[in-house]
Image 1: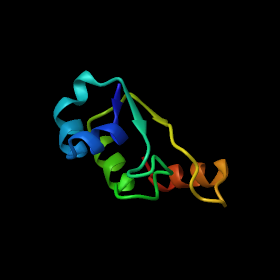
Image 2: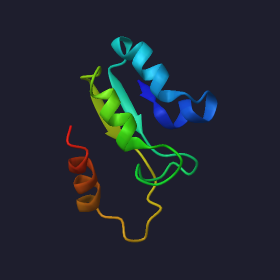
Image 3: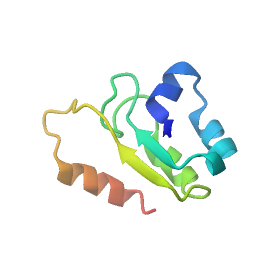
Length: 86
């Protein structure tokens, strides 16, 4: 398990770490920093991270975050995931 939220808080350089150790990771948790919120908010560019990660990682990615946006919907989350074109 690789929790991007916690790794960013503790160490940073999540993309570098993911690319280096991807063969040892079977599952990834996604939440943005600093408020453990939707992946399209916060300081991490998840579109870039997940596109780069898709080049070397074939495991599971789970979204585990608190809803920050009042207009949040699962439809919006699915549309965001589809916009990644992975």
